[in-house]
Length: 468
Image (tube, rainbow, N blue to C red; front, side):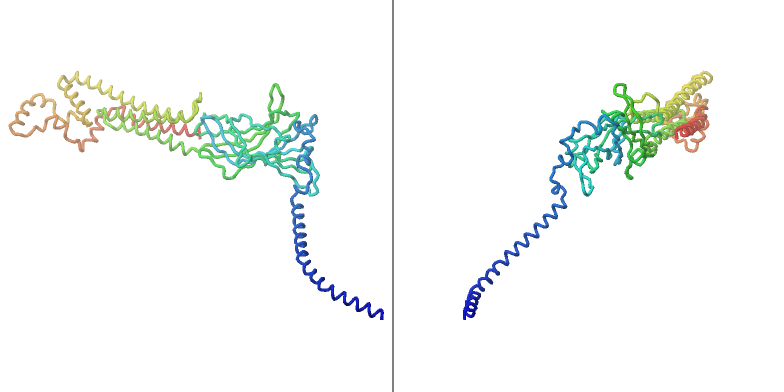
């Protein structure tokens, strides 16, 4: 009986408590879901923390690199052997070459390699740390400068183009994008058929060879260039890297690195702009040898025009070149061409003078009438540009005996005399042009037609044979 009553009692209690248990279970289900999602989120954040190394390390970079524990104003290993600093350069572009200022502008990536054990840090993955320009001022970096530079700057768009990479063992890579304008000692004695040897020199400003040793990191392969580098007036023959020493009496010996490149000038531009116009002016001056010696305005104006044109070419070339104290190759060519043009003008002055002397002698031999007629013919030549031969225009004897009779016949008949010299001046020479040019040529003109071209061609052969 006692057992039966206990069984009934526990059954009643179970029936009473079961609905509350089911209700509590239903209430706890959403809370369990929320807690599981929160656990998943926390696991994901933990994974992200593990991927982000800056959150895993409990120390700041200053403490990790021991920046506060060392004096970085001193070089690594102060008092010991010199610090080896490797250099390599990636040339991006050669922006300009200026003959007037005798300089060049180059943009390149300059990379330094050295080891500073003070910056070593523990790392399980042996991965390096990369920083920007903000860390540069807090550690020691090589004080490289460019010898003979006029202007230089580090690019700062959008931030300063500086990278610092530190390895766990203390090896450091420092890279910067720099533009430099430096002097190039040019020799213009063969301009514009010249080749210029320029170099950019790198050196430490404060540390001599006892404290810092500069060297090319990968030997001759330390200097790399962009394949698309091109210039308007030059083409680059070669790039090379070399090294040497520089001595200063007050501070000692310094390591110096050289970036050498050879520039050869494009000649085609100057052929079109300078040489070819000069050749044309010289050949144009030879045209006066084929013009009749009586055509004073034609020959004088042609000579003056060629002389002035050569002066313009000379002044244009001089304005675009530095004031060198020696003679350049282009100066030799232009001055010799100007001399040929000038001699063609002098040649006509000699022809005109000798012609005048011959007329005076003829005047003394033939008398006053012949002399007066020759003067009239010369005056007519000055106005209409055509030579009038005395034999073709009129007969001197008939002019002296029948001039009045012919004029009277012209009045009565109403037709002018065909022997009148003024009528003959208006008539074209026609088929007599060739005969008149040949017969009335001066001997100097005949020789000049052959001598001037031969001498000028010989000069060109010698000139181009020496400078090309």
